[in-house]
Image (tube, rainbow, N blue to C red):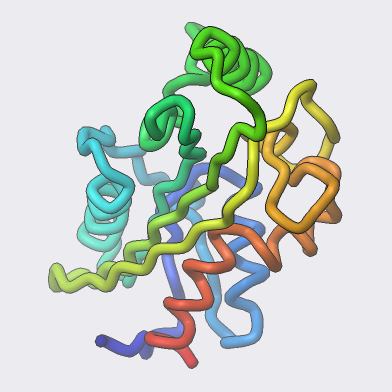
Length: 202
């Protein structure tokens, strides 16, 4: 397991919310976090069919382009009654001709669940795969998840993506009804981060 020894970590994302979340998680380690958008990096095409594959594409492209260690994540919601969909295509389900529409995407999840006739609870989990890559081609991989269920109708205005329809186990509220820092404490990304920090930063 390779230890992180630099003072700057490039996060291979153009998502401001995700960048803020990661910067907060990295704060205790005195590591400066910079986003791919700030560095003017393009978003590479995600051509793999697994979370690990797509995270690797993003992390290695960013590390190679900048000479900095780069962190990328690929994450999504996996719904059991939909045979794991949308999974790696979580963001794709929200794509429209004019950007991403997650309200539409959440409606699609609900419509497909209703079409299957699956009984509730509609068990699901958010999954996150982190890849920390170095410019020399080395990488380390960490996976995290949070179990829960899909609920309908949508609830809450906080969070992003599919948060309004995901209720984590042990809670009566959705991710979108939760305080953002509480969500960040128990999320799939926090789980993967805890594994990475314990191995590479702690």
